[in-house]
Length: 293
Image (cartoon, rainbow, N blue to C red; front, side, top):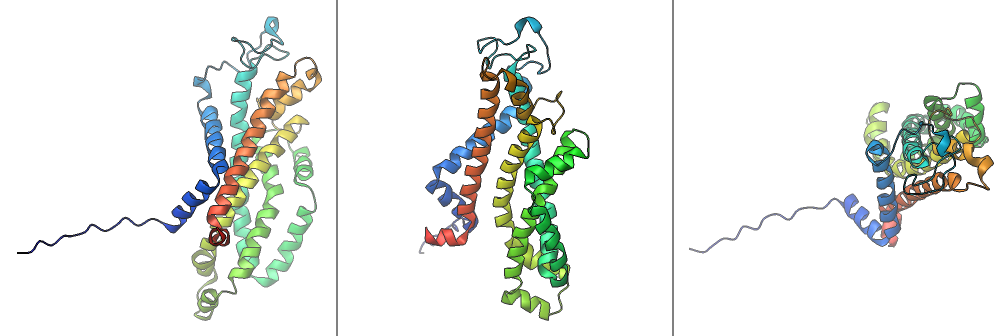
């Protein structure tokens, strides 16, 4: 009797996941960006357990203390611990960045899908988007914040409205090319309903570019939030954010530069990490770059 060897089937690897691995292997800076961003997120989530104190606790006798073992990042003009304020400020910046990225992507995706496929609606909606894009996002956000009271929710709404036109234009450009594909034309000829065509045939092919665009929107939103807070048009002063911390310390820059240094470095590192991660995802998800590599 001959023995029959039964080979176990090899585990298949997703092509998209393999492209991710190859792209991040070629771009170690993307891995560094992901690690830095993850560290910032963990610091924001576990802020109460990272040796922080109440970021609003005032101690006039300990005002303007330089960095030391007691105050790692020093203390501000009211004696508040800058380290605690910077760690808690990460919550505001990351929450605004992620929320704006999610909301602007969802709204821009919905508008871009419909306007890119319906020609008569495209002519109307895109002129509105062109008008909004002619205004710099920061100025548009400032104008919208001037109409409302300062709060995190209003900051998210204002920045989202400023970022939506760019997402709409990206999705529209993708839909304009996808609707000419043979499989889409076949679906139209077969009498498939418009919602089914958009969800089944168009939407899956827009997710990869949208994912990359979302990282850039997140980075831009964090910078815009810091600018709004710095000029007093963003989050309320009682909420610690990187922009508020730098705004309160700008008059003391020459005698206590550390008050601006630490929140500024955290903001710069976080934005850089998000951009590096987005570059790695772009290389992984763009098939033309993958073939070139």
